[in-house]
Image (cartoon, rainbow, N blue to C red; front, side, top):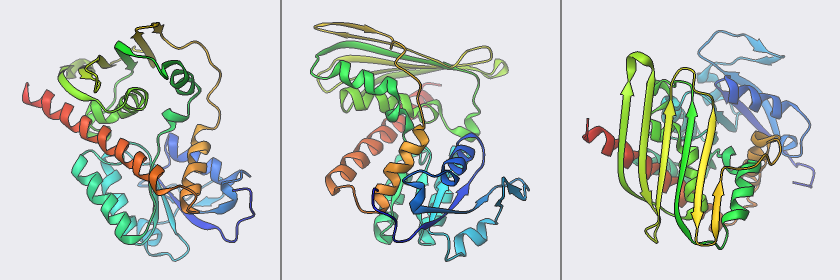
Length: 296
């Protein structure tokens, strides 16, 4: 990306919540990857007219416009699949916030569609660009895991909009898979008190070497957004992550990766490994959902 762009890809941002607003800010600021992109407008179900001089356009216009070559899907998770399909069918490249879909079959189908159309389909994973993850990656390399756990707490989240907890929390699962390799499901439970907006999902996983890993998502009023982890190795233990600095511009770092894909700067091997990991995590999330629902 150190070369000046021969042309700019026209971009539309779909959904202007937290992630969409950050995406629009990054597109408008002078960054190396933003030099390859031109923000055409945004799509929203709300009538907003314009935001900081960027015009709202209809979904129909975004799909049919020759100027629009790229769609950033930043809407609620439940709408991702439909938007991805529409933009790919319209011949646009797609960047989507995780999870790209709420089922494995849909993700596989959309990836096939992207390949048929010759378009980039990129699922954002900013959690892998965090300082904490970089620290953990260095800490676990070459170590034999005996057992581990990851607990995430946060305020309530609407399942209808963001999917089953294994999907809305897929960034935590992605951490575990990226650190310890492919995992298999042993068991899972879901405790819910809908009247209190409380839920706790407890998942027992194991590595390919049969080391146990537990993953817990707990959400409810008054619960602060926090991550607690504990990994025990043959050579010692790691209890939580020290303060390793501020996560700066993680959405921008993700955009840099996306632009590299647009420019054909990722090898087939790298793309295949990423796709394999994403589909593995989506498949595990679906398996966890089925396991929990079968025991209700």
